Image (cartoon, rainbow, N blue to C red):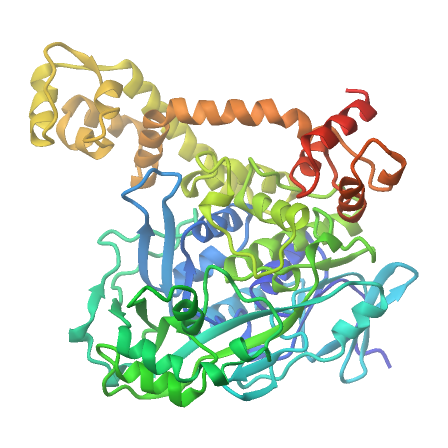
Length: 625
């Protein structure tokens, strides 16, 4: 008896990568089976209850522009919104939301169940089935064999996961959930290399037991925005977060447990995240710092549970609790569960190509933490790309690859493959050399037309993008060409403490002043307001988009010139089957790295650590350019 039909694509794991992969592939028309160990925990927020943040918010906007769902689900479950880095230039602006943890998972499940091409199965996958060097399905712990044309693995922290709390350690993918055993061994038998990584999570506390009067309140923005470029609801009310600090007494208590910390005793072999270290790691690495900030974040609308961001720890639970009692606001805290570290298997990402298909096994894709990343957003970005590419591959179509000048997602995948990672990779704006082009506000302009061409973004979404940028174009043209008299301009300039004008000047000259923003002009220049009324209903984002393009025009043009200049290297293709050992003019290290990574272009080769400019010159000469 056959329990399952043959599927186009099987997605293993329903975390943030798996959910986006399944949704994308199914929306494009593939018949998808999504297998998860627990149907109740789809897109579980295993760590902090938030989406977005520095550079991560840009990734969420890109996922949304491509037709993904992380931004939409976040908007529907948002309890607070903040635009980070607003005091800096627009390349640094990063949206961030606090979310209701339980609602987020429930909403993702509702979205997935509304997509007709997705079937579900609750089970553990412990083997990838292959014929020759091609994936043809999976085998589960219940002995089920399910056939498919492609398989996407998005296993998160579950592969041979071990949880550490002080001297205690036990198997698990998350606290209270069992690890996935057997799949790593299946992949090793197929020829894959593996490694170990470590991440962690903080204590959870009872908000009723905290004294928030001893903390600093952190409210959401007065005018909250959304992640999605579609019309999702903005929060009518918001919940506050709170800030407090550790102190020398807290640090002394934590040090008492160092001799029982798996981090320091060597029981954890995996590398932890450099930019999100545990509290004990912070104290050890920054011994001269007498305090560290803690962000106290609500878990949802209808729960008393709070997340202590900044207090990730694998120390014995009694040490964690004792130290927190000495933290302002925590004197009478009640705890739900301790922080813990989790160690898990990952597969170094040189083993995937730029579509996220593995190099060893055809039609097998890796996405998310299995590739060595950390973070919901990084996982979701890989997930949507794996889902798109698996569908395109089995449909006989070319792969979809984003380059570094097109998207943060492109930077992420390029970094993983060309540079590798030995610690959980986290995205930052500093990793994107073209970040002024890759702003959070223009992700729809960059990516929605590409998504529409392949059939993922809807016509409605594309039309919305076209209308938006037509309006922005009209506003820019008007501001650049229309003049304003001193009588109109000087009252505004005076209120903003910037010198008045003596003769008529273009609106663009006023807007270029750092003290002036476009909303000053809207409120103070009647002729400008009258013009805007002819453009149609305008959003704050459209007005802000026009302002950014005018104020930063020369910088944007300069960055685009650099992209155009270097793009010739991205268009010089390298054969995937070429043996670089045949080019004796290359350095030994370059030959080794190029054979290992198999870059698709000269541009990708130039970013590989150990490949010198001289080696690139050899490749260019060899290609005859």
